[in-house]
Every structure is written in C-alpha cells, then in structure tokens.
Length: 389
Image (cartoon, rainbow, N blue to C red):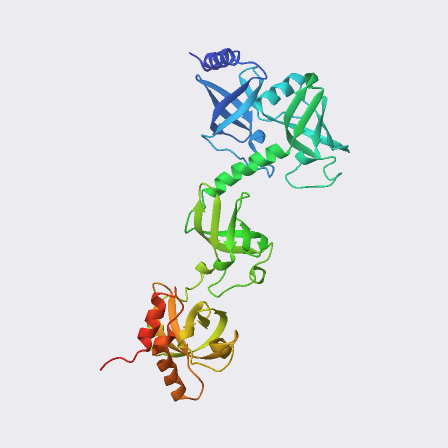
C-alpha cells in the first residue's frame, strides 16, 4: 500500500470514529502526548482526539497537565477527527455549547462588562450572565475592581434557554486552590523542613502559608527554646520563614510547625555540662506556688523548689528572696536529662553558713513540699542530704 493510500485509510478511520461522537458531547480521556501546539488525548476504544496546548495552560502560561493525566473536555469538532476544548472562547460559544458547558461543569470565558446591583454583568458568547459580588473572587473586592477583565467562569444557573445565566469565578478559583493544596500536601510530612510565609499572628502563635493555600500553626511554645511571651516579637505577617513539620493530623487537616527545632537543643548533653554541686548564675523568670523557675542559659530552665529556701521573717516568705528578674548564684541539686528537669537552690551571697542553713532547712521534717510535687521534690531532698561516709 502506498503512503497516500495509508494516509487516506488513517483519515477515513479517524472520520468514522469521530462520527461516533457529537459536538457538545463531554468526554473523559488520558493525555498520551503533548506537542508544541496540540496534545493528543486517548478517549477510549482506540479513539484519539486533539486539544490545543493553550487549553492546558494555567494563568501564568505553564502547561498544568502531564502525559498520563486524565482530563474532561467537550467535543467542539468532528471534522477529520475529534477536537476537544476545556474552555469555550467568549466569541465562539453558542447557546447549545453554553448549556452543555453548564451540565458538564466546564469553564467558559467571559468579559466583565460593568458592575450592577449585587454583582457584575458578564458577556459570554452572545449571552449576558450575572456574577454576584461574592462569586467574582475568593477575597472581598470593591467594584469596579473587575470591570473590563476577561476571566474563566463556571455556569451555576442556566435558565430560559441561556437568556438567564448566573456564573461564578470563585468556584473555579477554589477548585484550583484545592488541586494546588493537594499537591502541596504531598511534601508535608512529619520531619520535613519547609519554607513558608507568615499570614497572621495571634496570642497563641502564628499561621504559616506552606504553599497551595495550605496553612500550619506555629505555636508560641515552638518558637524558641527560651520562653516566648509575645509571638509578635518573633514573627510578623509577611515574614518568610523556615519551619519544621512536627505533626500532621489527616483527620482534621491540622499541621503543627516548629521553629526552635531548627536550632541547637540546649538540653543536648546537659548531664555533661551540669553536675550536682555546680554553682551557676541564673535568672529568675517566674514564680509558682511550689517554687521559682530559673533560666541558666537560653532555653534551659531549672526549678528552685520552695523547700530549698531558708526561712525568712517576711510576710511573702521565700518568694521575697527571688522576685522575677533576679540574677543570683544557684547550686545544682539534680539533673534529669530524660525529663528535662534540673533542680537548683539559691546560694545566699557572702555566707557559707547561710548556705549550710539552706541544707539544714531542706532536711527538716516540717519542710515537706506541697502535695503533688512528686518525685522531683524527693530528688531535691535526696541531693541535699550529706552523703554517708
């Protein structure tokens, strides 16, 4: 068979297959090849259709599909083979095509002509549609912000033979965001280090956009190894930051992020750096009913239990000796790296006898700690007792 005969046979077979479909019919197919101008789509039954590559590009001009992807499109021509379209140009859409696009959920192209009461008037083919203000974008905008713009819309109401159209651009934008979010979520696994942008800061932390509209929460407790009292002192809206994924809840779609985990952990090798009997300088950060919290270094906090303080004649008792902000010498009483606990006792200035009194007071039977303090208090008292020779 000659080349011309083979070409004719191929064209004839393609024509027969094309006649099995009608213009306006919606098909699903698989991309099998993407060329410079057209892509080829397998529509089943050994049938193949073409679609302009421009129809497969996003708003930035990038091809948004790949070989093997499934697409849904409308038959716009059966002459010499099937030609598909995923969107209808505003100058070529007929009433029948608009109705088919409505039933198939396909996007149509329209021009926003003017703002009217409650929304915008949109020209689509030979028809006029109405887009409510709430459906023109995913964020609130004030008219006439969209006048003169050409967008893709989805027809959400089709009445009176196409004379009454209600369209939505927001539906398509949200669909694109969901697709982007699904793609972005593939990279969000526990332990991943990602770049993000702070979108809002609250009392309890900050929300970080990880891409594709996916947000995670950077809790204030995960911002630094040192205690953070104000999240806005660490991050601000618009900041580009690097975070670590700590937890991903597939059921609630909540993502927990950490910032401090990207720095050195001050508790690493703590037992090699702190030993019982060491005297270190520390700063009192806060007081509780059972004792004072003392920062020995950024992110490394110890507890001076109330039972370790010498008695005073002041009405405020032991707390009067260490108001928050006090910097003083503290003796290390216990170190528990696994539980991240260090017990310390205040070393009174200039008096070795006073230090001894602290020990004696802690060992007195009537210096029992408050109920519930548990094993840490036992360890403190044990560390304070002189070892038997």
